[in-house]
Image 1 (cartoon, one colour):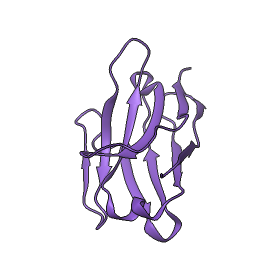
Image 2 (image 1 turned 180 degrees about the vertical axis):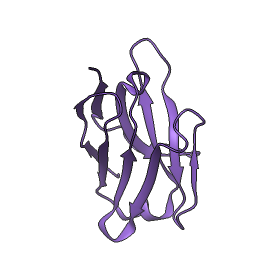
Image 3 (image 1 turned 90 degrees about the vertical axis):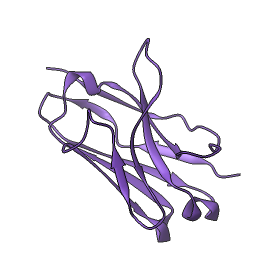
Image 4 (image 1 turned 30 degrees about the horizontal axis):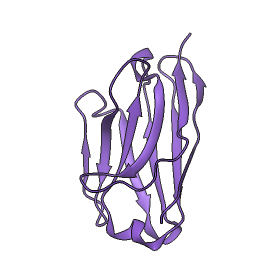
Length: 115
């Protein structure tokens, strides 16, 4: 069973940047499309970015042009570079398999955008 550990969140001012990392424990990570999800208080979890094993990416309209997803299959790690952050980006961010049966959810990492 793949375990996921997210890191890199924090408190940042509007317009700031953060880089999230997600380390996976198992090799099956490399054959799955991975995604970054976020859940704000009182809202449904949403998929904000995804990346195929070959590197094809897709983004939600709300983050396109500001967020960049990438992966390093040799390190079993997926990243999310977030620029020009807005208060509405505040949420707990998780990584997991996208468009398929998810792995067990990790703890996530809190991102708070506030002045």
